[in-house]
Image (cartoon, rainbow, N blue to C red):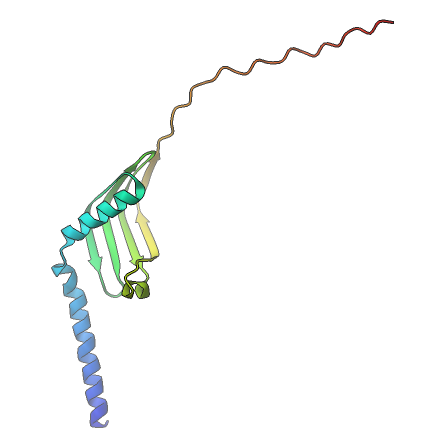
Length: 137
């Protein structure tokens, strides 16, 4: 193999190794509490209620994903919990600053829909039976 080709392969290998190490270490250096509060605030505003979760895991490899554990939502008339919610975003829109969901996995969802109580209305008065006047003969 020629020397320039060897150098190219070595550089590509080093680049991939650095990329893997960065993907492994990045979630440990990212302030997850700040991201957690931002996600909770944004989701709460979007649903017009309260969204909370206990823990979050961010992963960049092999595919970017965020997993939320023990999530709760309370927005009238819906209340619910999930054991975990995993969001896989589309990769290319992330480079332009947009977030699009490619796949959403929900484990053990429990949803309660609270409907307002309806008052029983008095039944509409029934029309009296039809009466035909007697025809005089």
